[in-house]
Length: 208
Image 1 (cartoon, helix red, strand yellow):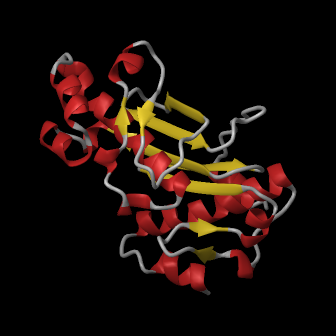
Image 2 (cartoon, helix red, strand yellow):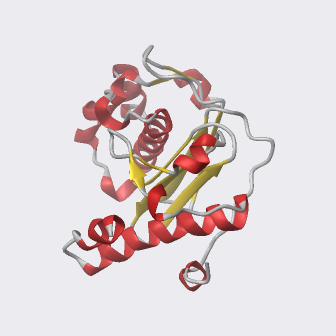
């Protein structure tokens, strides 16, 4: 009943489908990949609104969900906390840089060719959001306080400084989805032994 209310509180049909799809995807991932599932007692949220499974948490694992447009992603780990976020460059414009980027990051963005500015902003946002979700604090922590090492970024690696209230992920992954302007970022507090990715179609979600 709690999840039903959460889905139906959305006014638009497409948003209801996204919320329902996220719940189904978590159940699918837990069942297919960890051999467990959510029960009615597992549909809980912490003080920051982050969903979690007490059963999975007691085992030392975690999951995280994000969605954008037609895409829904569930990051799942048997050990340690995880975070995930999807972002699209169409959602960003140059005036947003001062909202979540540090001064050094803003300078870096300003010097990029115009064709790379927005997609780079989307990548910065997705990674920062994934880290904040992994740590369980969300936007209660200013995203400007997470600062990328821009020299490392230009070399193709992700390094950053974090406020003392956060712990650094030991694994960060970012890649394009169906089109170059949609990016997925995932992170984990424990380095994964292996990474398995599986794209699920809608009809598969209802088979669990």
